[in-house]
Length: 105
Image 1 (cartoon, one colour):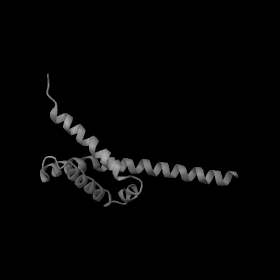
Image 2: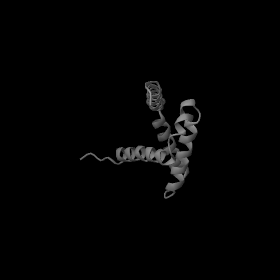
Image 3: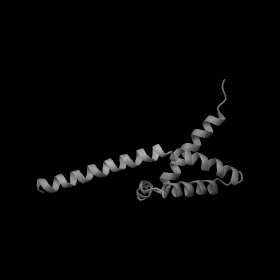
Image 4: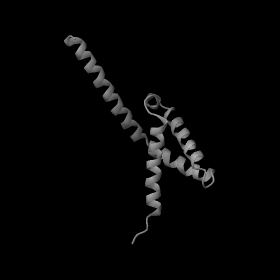
């Protein structure tokens, strides 16, 4: 492999890395976490106790919709799976639950 091809491949890889970092920063900056919190609350209000799958599906769908409204979000949706979104939402839910269940000693 000659040096020119190697440098082009390396430049492309670095550009992709920068793009992914930028996308992650934009998602964090735009408050995807807050959207997830709002949708968790809405799902808790809309569905009955025990309908956890329906609640999760609702929140996942809303997160996907929120991401699809921006150019960067559309790109991101090509690389993340439904399982990744579910894991993200579950982590937020666990944090909220821990805060709400906290009882000082």
